[in-house]
Length: 288
Image (cartoon, rainbow, N blue to C red; front, side, top):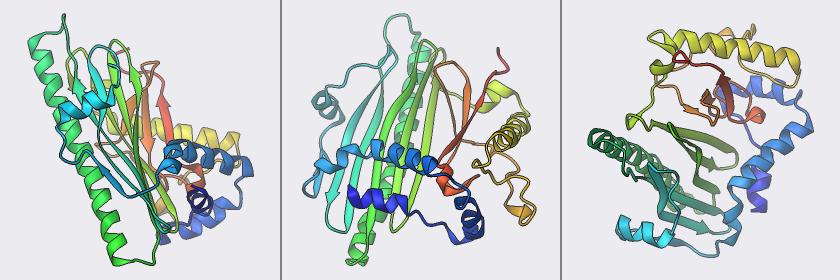
């Protein structure tokens, strides 16, 4: 665990943003760094209890895995269980991976059509989770085999951000380190009234890319004006091609407990590494 904390404190920057990071880090306050470090340590807290290489439940049925987890139902629509764990604790390599699965728990009052749609949505979410975690594990294994004297860390965890009468939002947290650290998130939001995965166009209309991008830029400029230690890649005259221009059509987001859409960016995507994974709340949606 101590090596992970040291590794994260000394994050290096990808070559393509090196100049920007050097300038930004010089302006960052120590409090920013401590908050960043504590957030990652919280996610990785369980890693210290790992004492050996262990692959848990690789061939166990999903039903048995869910029963063994004894995780309570989260709301009346879905529950989340850990179906597989991959853990490594060696001098140079560490892994703490918990692979979640979304299980439909639609009960009375839910139409057959909505229940079927919820099942299809959960299957699609689980496929994506399995794909991204399998890729991370395989890359980690390959690195261990190829570079015995190297270093590497991975972490996968998840948390339910919202689970109310209308919305279910799951956050998949992925961390990868090899001399420097890189954290990213994947969010999955489902409308319980339809069983379908939510899309930004439902909140902001067909022109959602421009609408959301304009609001993100406005919030970036406002935050930078309020705090000199807050930096985003916008209005950067030295290298204008690095500036944030627009969200992606499949931009990552979730719906928070207030019912607001939260736009999410990974580390280094729109800001220096010390800023971490940044979010922007769209306070009102079209349908409101």
